[in-house]
View 1 (cartoon, rainbow, N blue to C red):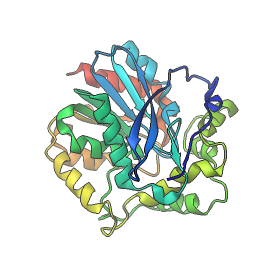
View 2: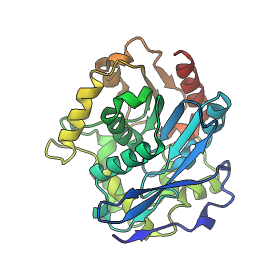
View 3: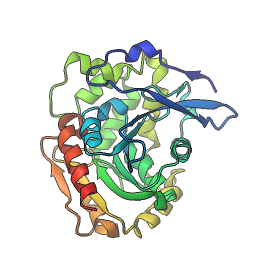
View 4: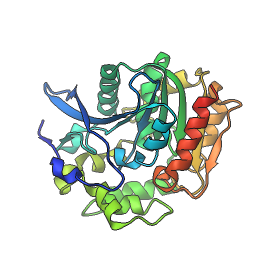
Length: 301
């Protein structure tokens, strides 16, 4: 497997992102290793909050949430998925599969030896993070789902997702920073847009970002169908606290919180909330507000 690694200097002096990089290694599934980057902030002995990003962002998306979570006394871990952020980037699109992404995160999670975890997941952070939770339910204390889903392919995708999928495959250059800025309600400064672009010096580094949209299950023939159905069977028995915190201005996942609330036992009676003035990347629009929701949810026990 040919692997690209973004030069460290690309991550120098990014606005609002003054965190120390941490690394571990996962099996690349072809006899080699991949370096996976993560942030680990706050007291080491505190129960961890695991922040899972989606497509095409990276842990930079959580920079506004990490300080208030740490201030509340939590250990905060934010992974960069393989192909994103400071993590290694296999160069070929067929290097990336849904199953491999789940396996890479499972390996990182097990190496970190985490217990009593609060999962916070958005976008692909949910497609992977909820699979992780379902595979290790005893390791998690609670979960917060924000603008995410766990599709099995049985329901047709919405028009907004299909439009995004088509764009992602046809656009000559995959404009990561512009994609982020087009899916928020606030106006991003040029240096913040550049920070989202930082992991990707050129198109060769974007194989994972290009591949993610076509890995979302859209039919029951999808390779991930059976695994996601099995994960739902676990979630439908999950009686630990499960909270939805979707935003009010995301055309892709709008309304998706309802199914989580209806079928997951732990979602019953929880203070589900709608984050106002939040686009798809609500952590960018309303990161502090989402952090307050997470802190209150944990404090409630």
